[in-house]
Image 1 (cartoon, rainbow, N blue to C red):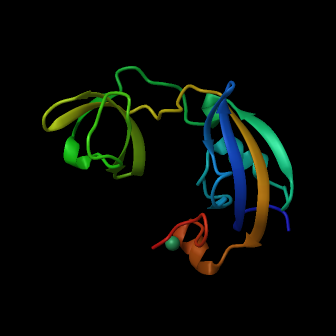
Image 2: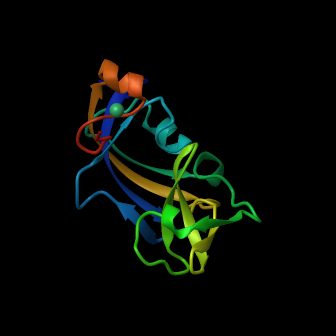
Length: 159
Ligand code: ZN
């Protein structure tokens, strides 16, 4: 079947910025997402539409269809206990922070005793992202997945 709204897609990807490899699923499970719900960046989701299992393709996603442009003055002081992903923080490290809009990535700029100054820009903001994608499987989403707005199972969401 083809990728369309309310299908669950498993795919492998390699993400590059220029020649630099930033992320890859090749050494592990493929990633899974529920198509048509904005769960992956817009430029990649658009490129996925209509593809089938076994297809391979490359796509370059500009910042406006990716993680947006970098904003200046996007710094915020965050209590260390709210930063997730490491025990000790150093400038340049990427942390996860839970917000009302969901979990987001921030970059630690300066670390104090109880707080860290963090850059709220997504680490990939302002970048053109090159994806090499292999579609592994496409299946209809379950009613539960559609209700939750995300994929379950391998590579997807676990409760
Ligand atoms: Zn769920």
